[in-house]
Amino acid sequence: MGTLIKNGIVVTAEGENIADVYVDGESISAIGTGLTAKNNDEVIDAAGKYILPGGVDQHVHFSFTYKGSKTRGFETSNAAAIGGTTTVIEFINQEKGKGLVETIDDYRKTDADGIAMVDYAFHSVMTDPTDEVIEGIPKLAEAGYPTMKLFMAYKGQFFHADDDAILKALQKGKEAGVTVMVHAENADMIDTLTKQLITEGKTAPYYHAVSRPPVVEAEATRRAIYLAELADAPLYVVHVTCKEALAEVKAAYTRGQKVFGETCAHYLVLDTSDLAKPGFEGAKYVCSPALRTEEHREALWEAVDRKWLNAISSDHCGFDYAQQKHMGYGEGNSFADIPNGAPSLQNRLNILWTYGVCPGKLSRSRLVDLYATTPAKINGLDKKGQLAIGFDADIVIFDPTYEGIISAETNSEGVDYSPFEGFEQKGRAETVLLRGQKIVEHAKYIGYKGQGRLVHGKPFGAAYQW
Ligand SMILES: [Zn+2]
Image 1: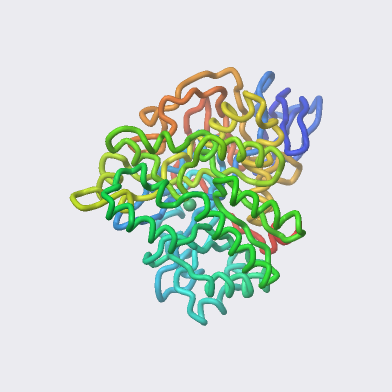
Image 2: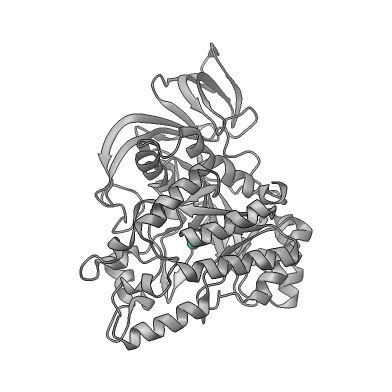
């Protein structure tokens, strides 16, 4: 039995037109006009609706632990599906003394396999850069995990990486086509400013942003670019949030260096005024890098439109407000003890559509490229992120007429707040197919636990090719 989606407006990274899409088994087997159904095929009338590829969210944290607090895991990945995302890529911090591949495999078996409700892949995060671990980087490519991240921020935490580790990762990674990503913030600058602010009694959530201003991100971004130049390796900068860091990425790319970057939905619509909300409310918006001011937001919209940045992720981090965000904030503690990150798994497409496409900041094609097509290419997922023959039938039927309000109470992230609480939402994923199976109908998840499957990435992803 196949599925025929009739008369929708098919949107790809290249353009859009009214067409039918035929799904045979798990793949797309035809796109064209006047396609006819065979016996027993399900026919979906999509007239007036947009047909988008399922989203690929290359920046998700289901396993992040910050000072003893752990985020929600794959048991909430149905929220991705409802938000039009059919593949998530999760960062796995290497356990000390364990191999990179081994850490991912162990986590995967207990926390993702048989639980995930959308397809999933992994990035390694190297935390223990011994010679043996560095030598083992090519094994990531063989195992189907061809990307790794290093944290330049977070001085004193076990996952912090120094320049030595980054340089070696870049050198070794390129032998096997492993794409190295960095969280670019200068750890020492943050550490110094944080201590000074706390001494001055400036401990409220807002000071999180003061402790890590744009120059902190720009410096680390530039340094990572120099390290990549020295290693002659491509570099991917995750969550670029400010004009200064953006300028570094753009300048490197313009010089001919293979340097690329993403931003995240919250940096496009939230700003430091959210962090300044009264009482402890600002803690909801404590994420790193910090939220910026409006001028940076506008620069990011321009950057994603003009292809200076090539992906928009969620950086989803499901920490509860009532318990976890407060936990680190007892007597004598400060903004520095608040778990970093915010939940946004379900609302990436909603935010981009409502605040990007609707006001004309992004074309629909550009949106598709940023939220699905390019992230798949960067990560070597060669069957994901595109509406094309032979690709996985991960398909979103998007109803542009829906209007609603975003709220944690009605979403499925399993977290007690949303940073987008009260935001208007225009349009929604009405039906979602995962490899040909309907997992969302009438905007409700109807799939099952364990329906998601591990997707192996191929090495030498797009950062090596462009
Ligand atoms: Zn992150």
